[in-house]
Image (cartoon, rainbow, N blue to C red; front, side, top):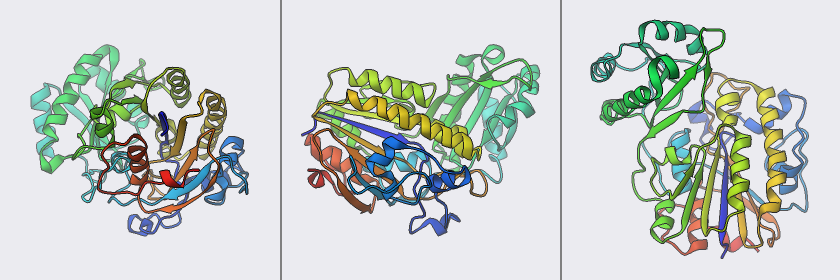
Length: 391
């Protein structure tokens, strides 16, 4: 048994078209391959040594015969291609009905009317928009009028942007909690309500702050995280994991302000003596570069992570297991600003392990089943452990 498992999610770093991609208009999408192609190639020596280049064609990242890690990729069993669906599936939840989206229409008038009445604030926006662009468009009006900026995206989210100084963080969080209650109604049941605080004095210098907070739906049933917690194991979240799971199954939570900061916290956690799972989400790939269709920024973010990963490896002990994966794709060369339905990588490293090909897995839940088997806790109904394949 591995005493500690570190599960790192490279948010949105998909690795190629999957069997059902065509149902989402994503046939041909390949996040990592297209980033490398669009930017003249990418150098990722640590991930290359793990066998990353064996999963798909990545310009600048070669396939290797004797990798340092086990490598494979996984298809998504659930319906959808969003953050919650991907993360939930990893630990045993099969989502058959996708969370609601309001990308094309904005939120219904009756919901907006209720939100205004319950919060005492008018609403402006109410459309799908980039989080930075809508601040340029409506930030000054928000400061003048006190109206909340409500917007959505291709994800199942209702986001409320408000100024930390002129509106106040506590007031923003209060309004988001009200929105969460309202959106438990089946007619408006989005996966997450997201508080998007910002600072600045005019449209030229508005900037979002790290005080984002997600109010997510709780998982439909107990997950591998709950099973671990119930048996007394540590379940340490870093980044937005705690928000995604609405605190369910988490024993300790750490917020982050960037991918690099998340990796720094991972180093700090690895220095401690714990028994169980450390679960990290690196959101910058998705939020800063995927949705904004910025291949060059995405490339630089991947290079930074590869270096941070190299620096993390010495912290691992002989009885530690590292699993690197993703929750969906977000090909920055694709049409629109939505996630892309893709395979996700599974890279598995341990200092005492050999290497090998884990093949193409049928579900992300194989990860959770492997963790469950390792710690001897209750398994979920989907997924097949690959623990026995690790030599």
